[in-house]
Length: 251
Length: 251
DNA sequence: TAGTGGTCTAGACCACACG
DNA sequence: GTGTGGTCTAGACCACTAC
Image 1: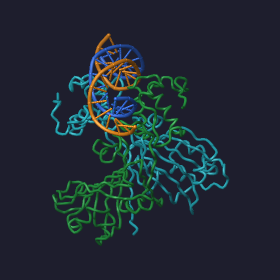
Image 2 (image 1 turned 45 degrees about the horizontal axis):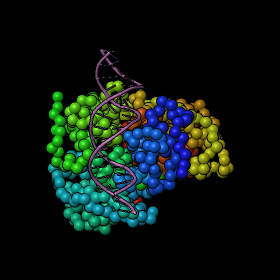
Image 3 (image 1 turned 60 degrees about the vertical axis):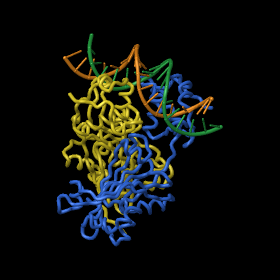
Image 4 (image 1 turned 180 degrees about the vertical axis):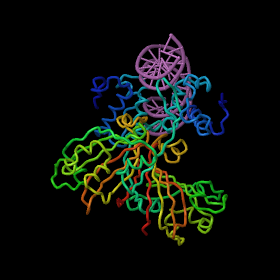
């Protein structure tokens, strides 16, 4: 169907075979010779095409997987990855995940993993400005789906007073909507964005390969005059999400 | 020196050997049994300890590398990763990389890779609001170092008028400082934060393993009344950098 | 049943670091 | 030279998917 140039690459000298092969495949993918979602030749066939062992082909495919260019499915094959990108405004932190998703044409859904009281970890206690050292907070973990794909894991901590008055609601819906319906209006938030590679646990929750980049949106939201309402983090698949902001530059 | 539990893990049934091994090593690393920066046993020794082949050990180490827990150095060994984290405020976009670095105790330095006129790519032309379809812009790429480690690659595009008046300066220093010294005061910016896995090219520039998460800070900065001055992106090592913001929630 | 990717082995050779 | 990680091979068996 298509030709593969086996030797004769410009800078491929001194490069390991698996790099030469993965870079050649990458070119083909980016040139559109493999449509997103379509199947590449099998590992066995690639081994014959490039005249190398299956081990080397597997290393080349691993390189592509790590770069987010292909995904593998046991028993089925190797497939080019399909691209999505949902943008969230930082001006309305995490809070309007649902609105942002719907606005961009995705069906939004949440799945609650846990919602339970625990003794506040030190860092949470500090952020929520709890006076008692070992006060109780509510610990929530939930997965956010868009179009039936898991795209984010949200971990949040609520002061007991807020959580108990909204127990059933918080377990079902999105944070912002639920708080608003409960009469709590957020006024400000301190946020921090970073990125981490997926651990095994996270890679299973979010259906991504080990090590795939995740965006971490750390937030601490306030109501009224700097009264903490919730803190936590949203870990989202970086292939699905980005965050936008308009900033005024202060000299 | 330390014991390794070979079989007998709670949930390790049905898990591949390389996962069991990498998770055990991960526990030891996170428990502090291997100090950051210290050397782990060699692949050969680990193979004897866990009684598996070197291939399986190498896969386990690859798992840890992808999670940013260890780094390998040919001829030397396997080392626990040392942690850094420099935070940048989104309120003063990229512009004060140097100030932020110095404030946090790092020596900042830039290395210019290129600074040359090119025909504006379509996306750049749109962002900079160029009237001519194929106007000339200046294309700059530079690497930002902190404490002698490369931590970010910045790719920027300047309108010709601005670039020509600051040619020599822009090649040497940080964007924000240079523009300010040239009498250009930034007033606002539109930014977008995302994350991507490192390609081969990027992994060489930034001295990270293939696939490591990079933070991408896309920016479009204005002076005066919405007059575009520069657009581009800063790709930074996610193990060194994070972005912070204070946001007011608009109902 | 056939084809696919996932795991694992035993062994070879190379490139690099260090004493 | 010795020890380290990096590359590569040939071959085996398993788990999953599809027909």
